[in-house]
Image (cartoon, rainbow, N blue to C red):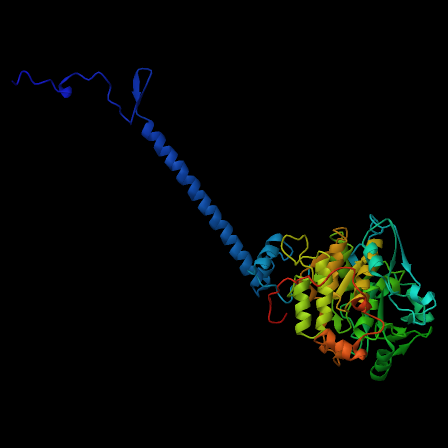
Length: 491
């Protein structure tokens, strides 16, 4: 019975070679390298993972150091933070770094070593620019007094944004509309090719003397303080005014330039005339620096031009707003602070929204749509002059809050207008801010609804903002303004 039991397979000679995972046959020989390959592959993967982790940790360390250096109060470490870099811009957009209030400005060491360009910047888009000087309504036999802005229509406004080699646009200063300059001042400013301009209206301030001005800049620049008749009288009553041989009047380094017959009812709107239309008041100027009247300039103007224009081959420079990037954010802040009538601000924003202006986002090519307009640095090129005209026309037609319309005009020019928006901390290092001697307030700032205007006609300005009362050629009823989140307690 035992003999009849089938033989077990294990007792037979194996006809196959047993597979050994640690070796394989090559040339009749068994090579035990399979496990070695597995080990090498595993080691390579681990090496790549470790290298990737180390690289990420290195990037994170550098990023954290960048964030820390940007917040450091120690000058040595804060110098490592490049506030113009894309990294800082990205971190700032994410809220990971807080912009400094003041920071060092990388200006040249000595104004005497600054090389002034011999040639003007080339005119690429506009070769000829002229201005509307007659108020058409007044010409046609109307009893209306000519308006400074010339009653630009919505259609004319639309055409003005279509940039052509030869253009004629509204740009203030229509005949017999006010803002008249004395002959002695007209004669004086013809000599001014480099201008530092400022303005005081309605007696808010007294002229503040610039400091750290080199002898070269004193000879090169005209320091022109534009004033209305109220401020002119106020200044003469409170500070010493020196008169030169040509009857020019001076307060320190500032030459007083009186504008007779204010063109607007609203002093703040009058103040936009020299601020935005500097090229119209001083047509011979090649470069200008505008500084608000309550600011004391503490940086040599030649160093400012070298830093913000010539070094980067820019023609227009303005500071970034400290708190807001979107026009709609700035509008919300203006309403909260009662800077102008709330319903009229909303109406202006609805027009801009209807015409396609989106809220600012990092996808836009600009750092912000909202500037700090108290300092404007520009070369008076044709395109810059056109931009200034279009910007002023928005101030003339709508509200006098020029920060609300700056980004809109940039948007309408479709990327043609290039400008340098520099960090807010540098803006605060260019000057010392002084409080107004007295604050301006008007009834219109407290209006909460359009119904209030209908009850009290005296609230309505008679010479400015008339676009808000002219039927707009579009349906604004369906326009919904984008939601706004308050980004700063101060904003």
